[in-house]
Image 1: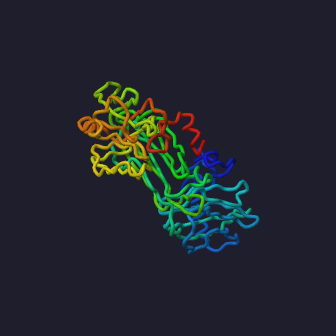
Image 2 (image 1 turned 120 degrees about the vertical axis):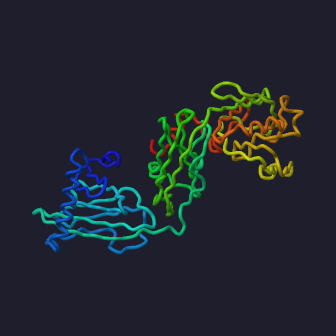
Image 3 (image 1 turned 135 degrees about the vertical axis):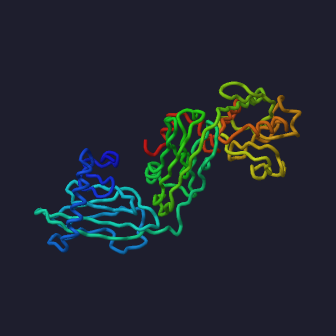
Length: 398
């Protein structure tokens, strides 16, 4: 890791293990020299060199994972080498320009034990050693994850975003650290970016729809990261998923027809009815959230009073959090292909709805056109409502 990557100009960086000098072509030699300093200090026993001051004393418990941990050399001395590690996992850090201090970079893991060792040097080259073992605390009220989508091992459509929702809002000052802890690797590689859709939700999508057959791996190294309000995550997370075939469905509210395309070729068309005037179906580009063979649809959950309460609506493909589905609507077959009569969902005949249900995956693209209102990106998985430039502007690392 370079000093520039850490946002520190001209600093000395600890990338792993014992590092006493700036990283570069001579890293191995620098590490060996630093390890020799520590070994020599241990063998020499008490010395005239005063030990460093550690911000975390030996035996400390319930240390905040948010850090930083600091090492400060006494006057007239400098910090020669520092190691801060959990098992074999070393914590990176930076030296000050005068090498009087060393500070860890990034959060620590929650609920684990760390070993800290620091070597100090005086002008004559004599060494002093200070060591500490401490444990970080587990939060009594952690920052919880409300949703990670898709699930691990999922097979999805080409429009599937990666969704990370927290149970609490994240302060603006804390979002960059969280975003930098999130990594996405795709095979084949495709450009993509994280973007904050709200104070509690950050999504990742590629610039264009995923290529069919893409394998995606997501790492969320969130353990110890905070929301900026005193709560922090207590575990890392990760998912892997596979992108299936390219299926995109266009629902035209003007012609009252749905057309399903695979790799650009129409494989089925069928008649539909959308939301009646005043209850128009949301327009826009969606990725399917999920699907269910039966859903109870109660108008009270949509703020429509007692208009309806149907316990077992069949063949439901979910496209907005506000309650929009493509589903079986035998009661409106008379209007399908003719006019819009629903309370906002897209209704199809039982045969067509069952076919669409059976042939749709989470993440498949659904476009609703000729609607007088447009869905917001956070109402479901409508990330594709954003232009690429607007999407990039939502990143905390821009």
